Amino acid sequence: MRIHHAAAAVTSAAMLAALTGCFGPSEVTTEPNKPAAKAADEAKAPAEKKAAKVAAVGDTITLTGHDEGLKVDATLKQWLDPAKSADQYIQPQDGKRWVAAQFELVNTGTAVYDDSPSNGTQVADADGQRFHSGYGEISAGPLMTSAAKVPPGDKVLGWIVYEVPKDSKITKVQFGLDSGFANQTGQWAVK
Image: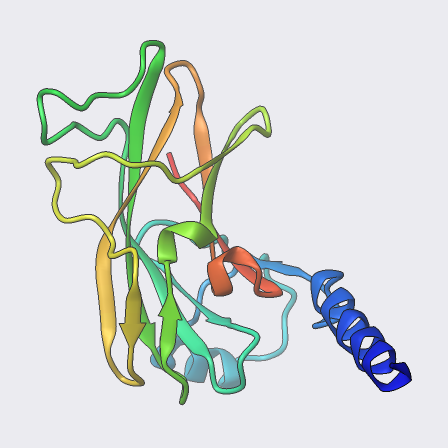
């Protein structure tokens, strides 16, 4: 009996450690990757204090996950506000509208990217309210898959839809790996 209790205690301790974030501190990254040519030019230039650029539509942020070798270049390709429904019968609820982010996720690591991308994303408005992804077919194009299994070197592309209040001014889009539980989250400014 003592062996079973000891094993249960070790298992419980490991689960608690995982749930309390023992993977390291959380980080929100707002600075986009630099193109190779620009990075080389900056390396040659004298060291100056420059304001960091804030990622926007079209920019890529490299993100890592909990698994060794899990690394993805996430690009916010397009932003729609409002997003129009592709189905006359499925519409936003009264007093709300749809907005949508098109992400391209390129697996630049050595591990398979296996996740539901929409679980790891949210938008924020100017008042600080945050909204998770929802469901809605939009006329702009195909939705992001709900079960991405992307081998190294491959990519996935699709729209993620959010239902937000009609008067809400959305200013930020966030995306993270591991269904949003990775320590690193990318953030893009939108208008």
